Image 1 (cartoon, rainbow, N blue to C red):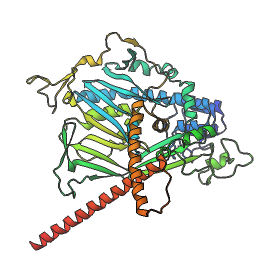
Image 2: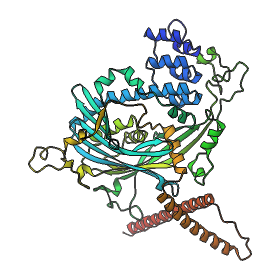
Image 3: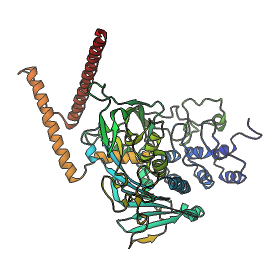
Image 4: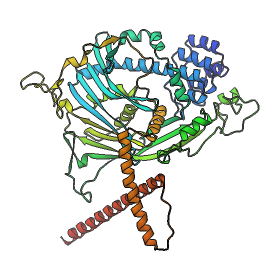
Length: 584
C-alpha cells in the first residue's frame, strides 16, 4: 500500500529531469533507489531510457545499480548505448567498471579465505573455441589458464587478453592475489613489458573517488560501442536435462572408457545436457546507415552462416504523435506511464527499438570422473567466481556448472558460447602430473604434506607469488579495462574476426581445404550431370557460398542416415534379444 504523497516519487522527478530535487530526495535517505515502477524500471533505467543525463549523473553518484537488467533482459549500459549519446555511454560505462571493480575487490577476501581451507594445487584450464561452420574453427583462438594455489595465495596466468580494434590481443599476464591481515594484495604482472600494477584491497576500497577517476573510458572505447550493434546472448538452461551418452555400436555396452587428462571417464559418465537454448538478440537503432551496412556485412560467403543478417525487426509500434520527443516517440503522459492499470499496448519510451533475434537449441557435453582429486566446490568454483566478474566466458561457465550436475568432477565441458562458437574447457596437468613444472612438486614420502588428508598432495613454490627480479612495480592503473568482455561488444568482435582473413598460414590452410571441398563438390555435380544424361544442360560452377551450403546439407543428410541406421540396428538387436528370451 503506497503511503501519502505521489507514488514513485524518485521516478517522477526523473521523468521531469528535476535533478536538483532528485539530489535532495536521495540525501534524505527515505526512498528506495532500486524501486521498480509499474513498467519494471528502476529510477536509473528510466533516466537512461528518457535520455535525462543530469538525473543519470545524480543517481550514479548515489550508487544506483548499473548491473541491473530490465524485464526485457537489457543491461543499463546497453540501454545507454541505444540512446546514441556519447556522454551518457561514457558516464554509465565508467560507473559500470567502477562497480565491477569494487565488487571484485570486496569478494577477494572471502575467496582467499575459502581457498585457505582447501589443499594446495596447480591445474591448467584449456579453453578451445570451436565452430560448426566449416573452416572457421581454424580461425578461433584458444588459451590455457594456468592456476597456482598455495595457502591463501592464488595466481592465474593467461595469454588471450581480449579484443581490440577487431583483432585478438595476446600477451603474457599473471594475476596474483595474496591474502593479508588488512585484506589482500592484488597484482597484475605484464611479463612482456616487465611491469607490475599493484593495489592493496583495504586502501582501494577506502578511496572510491580515486578509483572512479581511473575508470574513465577513452573516447575510442565509447566510439566503438556507439558504432557496433548491441548484442545480447543468453544461455537459457531452465529446461535443461542431463542424459547419459550411450556407447557401443547399438548403445548397449557400458564399460567403454574415455581418458581425459589422465582420468578415465566411463562412457556411462559422459552426459549430454539437452534443451540448452542460446538466445541471441541484436539491436541497431543507434547505428548510422553506414554502421548498419557494416554490421550486416554480406562481404563474404561466411556471412549467412554467422547469422548476422536481421531476421525480424520490432519497433515501438504506435505512430509518432505531434507532441512526441525522440525519447518519448508516442507521447506517453506521466499519468499513463505510472498508472499500473493503464495499458500502453505497443507504446513505449526510449528510441524506437530495431531488433533481430535468433533462438538455437544446443547440446552441451560433460565428461565426469568420480576419481578426480580436485573439489569442484572448494577449489575450482572460487576461481571461476572470481574470473566471472570481469570475464564473459567464465560467467557462462559458472552459470552452467552451478546447475544440479550429475556426480563427479567435470574433467571436460563443452558448452555453447555464442551463435557460432562453442567453448571446450579441459582440466589438465594437475600438480604437474602430465608436464612437470619446477614450481610444483609432489612431496617426499613421510613429509607433513604427503601425510595430509588430500587425495593428491602437492607442494607449490611460494616464489611464484612474488614479483620477478627486474620488474618495475607501479600503483593501480585502470585507464582502460583489461578484460571488458561484455557479450554485446565481444560477440560482434568475434563475428568480425571470423569474417576476416587470419594469418598467412591460416589462409594457406583454409585455401587448401577450400580446394578439397571444391573438388569433392565438383565430382558430386559431375556424377549428377552424368546421371541426368548427355543432353543435360551445362551448369555454371557454384559459388563458394553455394558450395558451403551444399556441404552442410550433405553433412546433415549423412548424419541423419547414420542415426537412422543406428536406430534400425538397435531395433534389430532388441528383437533378436526378445526372441532369445522367448525361446528360453
